[in-house]
Image (cartoon, rainbow, N blue to C red; front, side):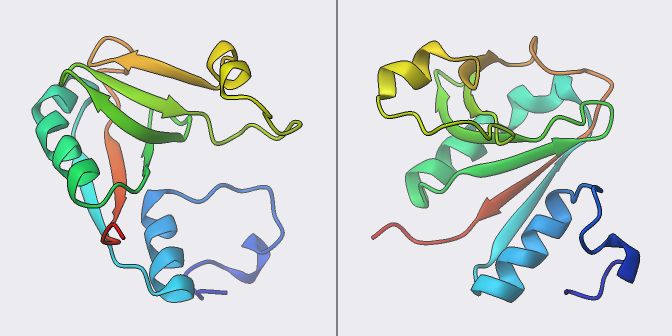
Length: 133
């Protein structure tokens, strides 16, 4: 319990956002995170080089959430500063035993920036700052 929500939140079906994920990583796992606020989906292109740098420097996945686009996303990679490889964190079925099966699924795919994002939605990104080993 981080004490940032009412007691009724515990064991509820309510979602947490990117800011709460940052607090959890910090308080429970001692992982510092950077929050990146992007005012609208159309501005995502302006942040691609920063995301590329994050993956070069840290290599950790990036959590992404928005307001009008409320589907959480887990960013795994940047390609050609025009696409983001996104894993859907909502998958709860059997484990994928082969990478080819995961690639064939709808849970992992390349998203085109900015076309596959909602232009009227803001986005918050949580970038864990763990140094690569």
